[in-house]
Image (cartoon, rainbow, N blue to C red):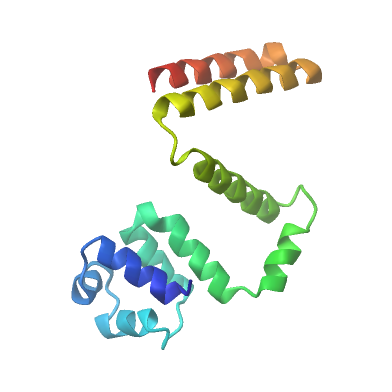
Length: 150
């Protein structure tokens, strides 16, 4: 989906008119309209203003921006870079979070809690194998308590 289409969807879902969004961000409403119609390009400065206005849709807006402005071969190159690189870590973390959300989004809270408990059990096993279980136990206990409170 093009950035302009995503922006229009987000804006209308939030009940903002072109003029309303313009008043909140300081971006001319005619420019916003042209971005939505893909007649004008989006830039980092405008993206930043839009993300500040729609923080809950930040990921969706940034993803559309990246897909529209960064060539696919560059994204592929970033993904194929060594594990230690920050950019790769960020992309992989976002991929993992997105997969996690897709997996759990339609499940009931009790089902989500069960899956989280199984994940913690698995992490405990991995920590034991790595010899870090004692070090990790405090963190794992905190997570277990938070899951119980859900």
